[in-house]
Image (cartoon, rainbow, N blue to C red; front, side, top):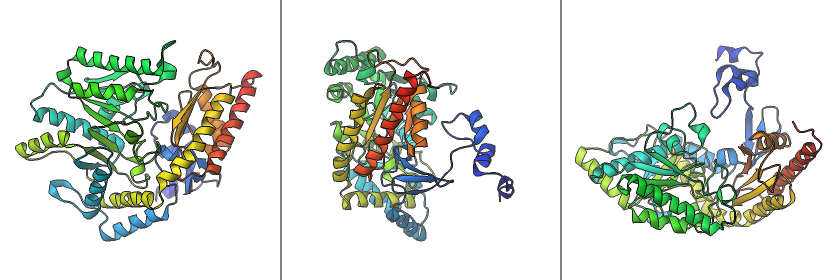
Length: 465
C-alpha cells in the first residue's frame, strides 16, 4: 500500500501533489497544494472529499450525459464483467456487445453509414480516422492526397495527429505541433471574426471562399479531408453562423474531400437532436463518437464511415493481408455493454424530448445574461451547451484586464458557490448533464448572475484582483 498511503499524516491533496501529474494543469503550481479531490457523485451533483456539494455544469468534460449515479449503467457493467469482462477484437475476433453496438450506431446515424470501428477516446478515434483516410488515399492510388483541413480554435484531441488537427495554440506550444500537412482556417465565430457591416450570411460566404482558395492553392489532389465539430466545444462553444454548412458542403464534395464530423461533444443529445449533424443539416462521410456514448462511465469511442470510405480500405486490407491498426481495449465488451444501456435509457425515457424542453429554459437564462450584464459580450449556445464571453467594454468587445483573467475569476467565484463551469480564455462555458431539470438550470444561472454582479462591483470600485 503506497508507502502507507504516502505517510499516514498526508491528506489526499498532499499525496496528489507528491505523486500525480495532471493533464491540462500547471504542473509546477500543482506541487503547492494538489488537486481538488472529488469523492462521489449523485445525479447532476458531485461532492468533494470534505463533503461540499457542486452542481457539475459541464458534465465532467462535456460528457456525463446521464449524471453521476445512473444505477442501470453500473448494473450493465457488472453483468457483462461477470460474463465476459474483456476480449480483444483483433484478427476477426468479436463478441455480442460490440456487434450489437456497431449495428445500432450505424442504423441510427443521421446519414447512410456502412461500418463502425471502436477505439477508447475521441483523440484515438480522430487519430484512427486520419490513418484510415491516408490508407484509403493510398488504396486509390491518390498518394499525394494526404493534407487535412481543420479550423482554428477547433478541438479534436491531444494525440500527436489529433492534436495537429486541433487549432488551439496552447495545445501545440512546446510540443512541436502541428505536424506538416495539417492546415487550419478561420474559426466560424461571427462575434470575433466578422468584419464591420458584414452579415452572418456574408461572413459564411467569406469563410467558405477562404477554404476553397486554400484547396486551390494547395492543389485539390492533395487535400484528403475536412474535420469539424458541428459546434466547436473547447474552442469556446462556437455555434456556426447562418449559411456556413450549407455553403461549405458543396465545395468539399466538388473536390472529392472527405467530410468528418467530430461529434465527440455534440453527439447523443447535446445540441437538442441526437447528433449535431442533424441540428445543422451536415451530411458527413465519417462521424467521430465518444464521451456521452457511455456517459463517460467507461472509455469507448467509435468511428462511423460510409461505403465511399470503407470500400477502398476493405480492398487494400485484402490486398496486403490486414488493416494493421487497433487498440487492446477497442470495442471492450464491458464498455460496449454500458454504451448499449445508455442508448436504451435515452430511448425508453425519451431523453430527447426532455432536452428539447429544458434547453429552451437553459438558453433563455443564458441569453438573458447577455442582455443584462455589462460583462457579457456575447451569450451563445444551442441545446444544452452554452457560453458567456466576458469583456470589460461591450462596445469594443475587449477587456482591459490580462487575457483570461475575467473567466478564470468568474470560474473560481462560481465554484465557491457550488457550481462547476469551464473557463476557456475569457469564455465561461456550460454543458450540464442531459438529465438536468429547470430548477437545476436556475441554480446554475442564479449563481452566475450573482458572480457577475460581484465582479461588476469590484471592477467599478477598483477592488478587482
